[in-house]
Image (cartoon, rainbow, N blue to C red):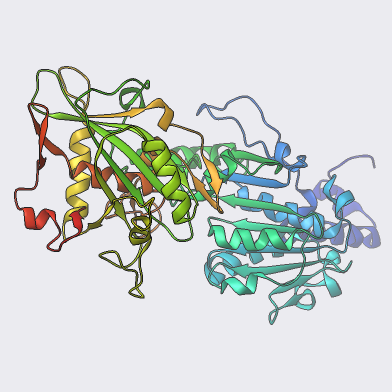
Length: 518
């Protein structure tokens, strides 16, 4: 009988021995579809955009890639975790279409997720139980293959998959050399760095499958600007491209999420400022202008945000009169972000400021106060003033309420005038440069920081975006700008009578000699 199916009447007419054998085949096939679905996994190939205007998930493009790193950004239920589990399972079994040639069994793999109970046990281990053929497991069953003590799944061919959570101490991510590491959802960059070291000896690969529910995290900058020599590929998956979901249910869910930012993250897997941009008035089309000569009566200031273990950020600004107005315009005409010693900074600041009449010099230190660090020794700002090449900086003081006042001042100054369309802030084009890695951190320009300067949420994205606290990441230039904005001079007839918005001189000085309001 040359057919793929058999009717119930045909089954009843089979000889008893053949009928029993056939029934066993049917039962085994149903079990495999339920417990060993990895046998039938085929990566989805891209197709024309669907009714939502979104292309189907290009799983095949990632599956066939030879890149050092594979990043899967996707909405909830888009199939990204199932894709990653099957990817790792096939490499462990030695049946991956091309990666198994480079990493033949036995291989050592590791998968990491945010929480052990909810994410590792509740998702990853469950997926492996559903996908991995029992014959491939050590001893032929999950019970014999899984070691609870080491959180490791062993294969019959000697391969292993180790499972961990982001909750574990950073030191625990050292240890064995690995052929591949996978991160399920957003994790810290420090864990990523640890994991990459484990891949060096075996020339291993890295994969991450995540929904960007925490906003514009480090992962997106890494993918957009990978280190030189590192091959990185990424794709976006959506639930609309998952053929195993009910299309009507997906459409209903899409309409239920009213917050546009949350919808972008949860459905389309895109990186958005979930907590809201702190200075939404910033617009690169308005605020970035070609470099030009400064006004001859401009009042110039300098500020540097000092750091011990990361790049310090320096900024030169000029306050210019606005024609037909008694207000001033803040022009950012030079910026510099580098990881250097204090003497190197002294030299650079002097060279770049040569011939310029800078009226005010201010700085901010990460720790300590009044020129001293936490050990009562000279702080970085204090050291900056020392020697023949010392820079006469005054350390900022930060009384209660100064941060909020500075943010509101910047918002007001970035707001375009409804009549002219111009604002009180200009940033020279030369201050808008490409992001680069400095001492292990991604460092970008002032415009880059402004676009990422956002409020953080106390939990992952839901239908109510929480706007509570500012996320203090990549904000060194913004800090400089905030300090300088609060020091706006009161220029009349080409002169200056000091800060315009501080009537109380003692408050301006921070209550103590040698500090300014920040």
